[in-house]
Image (cartoon, rainbow, N blue to C red; front, side, top):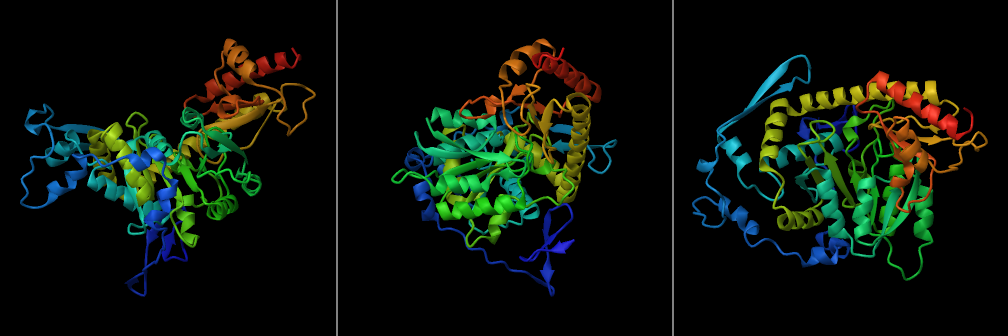
Length: 468
């Protein structure tokens, strides 16, 4: 354990807990950007959105003594569900099961319409989670909203911040799921190259310092800093600090998409998130963070949440109120019952077990890469997530370290015909340019399947190189 300069006790796992100094709670003064700072960042559509005439008044129902004739909520007496129960594995001993039941008021809350941003108790739990995981406390100018997975919230954030035709900064290669978001808005996607250490900050600086005069600079940078999909990279502390500095110098917001934060299994201490690091900035409020429970609880539950400057989160909530009213109350109620049963300590024990599981999967896949593709491919070892990003040496005369050739036909057609399905790297490049890289997921396959898949890929690659 070590004490951080802001009075937070940091554990070896990289998570933090509040501490006291001399028997008194340590008060931290955090300066945040004012609400009107974000006006210029909002898209035209976001500025035109108005609160729902019904949902905007939901909080007024909480005043004692008020008889509400406001909302068209169905009467819960007509809901056929009387109780729900489910079993979960114990975080401390996966061989043991715990039973959790939902009934009474907690079930009723899960079966009824809920506030747009989420069930109040679950929001409170998530805010506490951000304090433990990132050292961020309430009352610092940020808020939190629950969505139907982080993808739902990222889409809404993009539409909240970006106008059609805007230039946007995206790390490259980039998560393929955001490329269509920007394409449908006809955005100019400015690719910022990455390497094994994260966004190449010197290239980002070069882009911004040589930006055409008179052309509006990008308002956002999109990045996945832990176990990036597709590259598997985890950004170093130095790179993160440099990107934050550039955000302040060139006035852009960072969209920190972080579904693999809890899947970090590197040997070194976990680097702090952008959301945490900005506490060291003169003012906080340039990071919008997206968390997902898909990789640690269930992908099908579609549970995610966004944390960031309150004016931006409020604007996202206005989008939600128009698009889908809210995320599922029942899924929120199930999640709340689980995390309240566990508490933070058991939650972190579970996420550590998840990270250990994927570390073992990573090791199996890399062992197979060494066995079957040594000398035929190049890669960096991921420290988080569930992906390997490797470059095929498509020619015996290919120069190491140079991205020569195009993996698309080999992967889409020849490898598939040979019994292997993966993704050619071009799908992760907004420009669609050729690349010899391939993305492979190691999350599901057994050791036998991994070895067989890479053995098959080796045969296809050797044939492509004219060596068999």
